[in-house]
Amino acid sequence: MRHDLHGLVDQFEVLLQDMADATGERPDELKRRADRRLRKLRSRLSGLEQAAAGRARAIGRSTRGYVSGHPWIAAGAVLAAVLAVGLVARRRLP
Image (cartoon, rainbow, N blue to C red; front, side, top):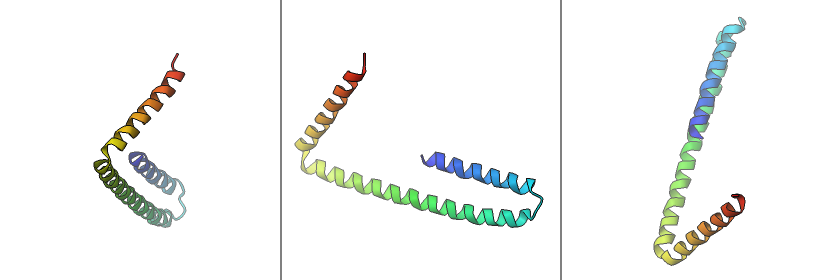
């Protein structure tokens, strides 16, 4: 997902450059505004990435702590999940 978002931002940059080249009217002003918006977009994207990574690490730590304290409950939960996926897959396969 991160790679896709960065690709989208890159495509947006190319589109803006093409627009500035095609319009003959104040391309410098258009480019400055687009660059400002693009910097904001990149900054927000970076912030979202950092926040998501932080949440994932926190979830991983809490999960590891719970599994360490309750290994049999965790094993039972995994077994139940595998069983449920197996039953669903069995119904869908011919």
